[in-house]
Every structure is written in structure tokens, then in C-alpha cells.
Image 1: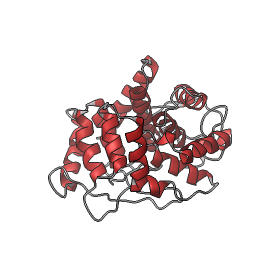
Image 2: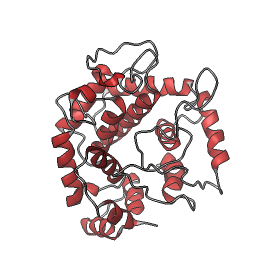
Image 3: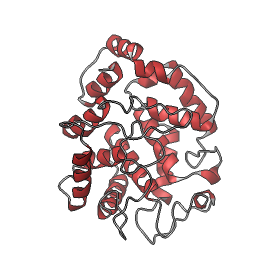
Image 4: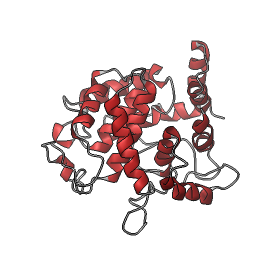
Length: 289
């Protein structure tokens, strides 16, 4: 088992690790080596590499991660939220939420960047059909309309996921955040988590694919994370997802990665050839932690 995964398991289970062990496991991880060996001053490279590193607890100790956080804060954190272009007009739900989650995982939950991104969600994100956002900028219309009469499902899913992570990493209880998580989760369960209401077909590309770490598309891995953390497996809308997971098993509680995103900065932790140790942990043990 890669020591990055050992760190994740120990962290999730609230095991006490010495600084020496943490630094040793970070240094010996082949995954960490892969994630820190190249660098590009490119917005998407920085976003996707940060999402990858954020899955590894204590990665914020690495000089590479600190450099990456500084770059993203300087280039992409605006006065209104995270923007994938660095311009306020191009704040969209998915990227704002994913960077909020990554920063939170990297020990930055109380930072001005995260609090600004959270404020954007509270003020402008919608979690159901036929709701109107007061966000005045037009960047959200570029990709088919992130928050039109039928809001972008990916944006809702990524935001719910990010808020769940934020809640888990912060001591204080935010009733407004909890209400948004509840509303968003209920909306997703009405769609059986991955199906269109009209014809039960998958809502978006890759939503039934297992991938890890996350990228901008909503995947089966994101859906399992949400249902695990909300303990919603017994809800009626979770049945089709449970059946899909069983169908995808390649052994008892074993799954392979289905899809590897091909963008600069993104690095899958494992190949598609054999069952994934990360997915086994995230789909099973994490539900009970």
C-alpha cells in the first residue's frame, strides 16, 4: 500500500502520528513523488494538481504544495470566489466548490479564500429547478448555463461534496451550510443520484465512471462520497447507485478505475489495470469511519 493511502486512512481514523512518521510517509510515497516532480505556471495545471494533492493528508507540509497554494491564491482567488480564469466574471459553481474543498483539506478552511468562496455559494448557488440566482456576471452562461431554469447538476454535486468536506473539517456548526447540503442531497436523491428524471439515462458524461482523484466532471466516486458521508444508503433514491456499484465490482468490495482524465496537472493515483486500493478504502472503510 502506498504510504499516501496509509496517511489518508490514519487521518480519517483520527490516529495520532508523529511528525517524523508523517514526513517519512510523505517522502516515501510514490504518489507524492509523481505529483511533485513537474510544474507549470498554468491555471488548469494548478487547479488539477491541487485537487490531487488535497486528497493526501498533511500534503500542505510540502514546499511544492505551498508554492501551488500561493500561485492559486494569487492568480485565481478573486474578491468574490475562486475563478478558473482569475476573473470574477468566470466564477462557476464547480471550480469554486472544488477549490474550496481542496483548500479545506489542506488546512485552509478559515482562510479568506475559503470564506469568500463559501460566501459566494451562500449568496448565489441554487439547489433546485426554477430558482433564480442574483449573480450578475455572464461567465456562468458560457457552458450551457450553470444556473438556468435547470441548474447544472455537476455544479450542484460538486458544491454538495465541498460543503460536506468543509463541515467535516471545521469544528463550528453552520446551520446555513447544513441546510444547503440537505437541500442539495435531496435534489440529487430525486434523480437517483445519476439519472435524468425524463428517461433515467445518465445525467452527464462520466457520472457512472469510477475515477480518482476528482476533476471537474461529476463521477461515481463523488456520488459515493456524498452518500457515505450523509449516511443515505437506505434512502429510496440511493437504490440505483447501490445496484450500479454491485454491477461494477470486479471482486468482493473491489473496483477498478474506469476513467482517467487527460488534462495537464491531473494525475490518477493508480492505473485501470487492477483493482484500486484507494477506491476500496473510499467506498468501504470510509463509510464506517
